[in-house]
Image (cartoon, rainbow, N blue to C red):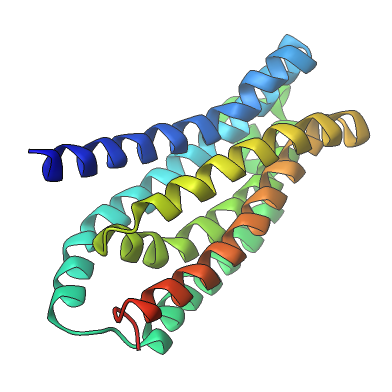
Length: 207
């Protein structure tokens, strides 16, 4: 049935976009930088990706609850924003503390030869705080059949990331890739969250 196939393809495309966004940095570094820089960045990226898996699992676990809530009655906008802020502040505190011990953490796990990865990790770790803050909004989009908004934002984020990676790498070096990734996340997340609230209120899912 078309009504079943199209949503499944949409969810698959969302997953593909998420994978693309996480791999852009490594692929571009392999073109712009050296093998050593790729290795240094990959260590930090791998650690952040493991933390990001927790976000993915939390989003999946709470998705049925979002579907049930939107089907029963409208959700208060204030509650959705409050949940997002709680997640953001909690992860921001964690990221801030972790950024101070990032070098020691990398040295302990991977050895002194990868100590530069700690500087990259201290920047990328803040990506998690923003990522956790967005999952109430992305879950709402998916629960209300508004997945295309998420797809459009993912495409924009990918294009921005490619452009800023190129510029920031030649401006700041290896750490510029981390700056670009974090900046793109901020640039895309704020309008996406505000637009999600606007659309869902217009559709009657938020009050």
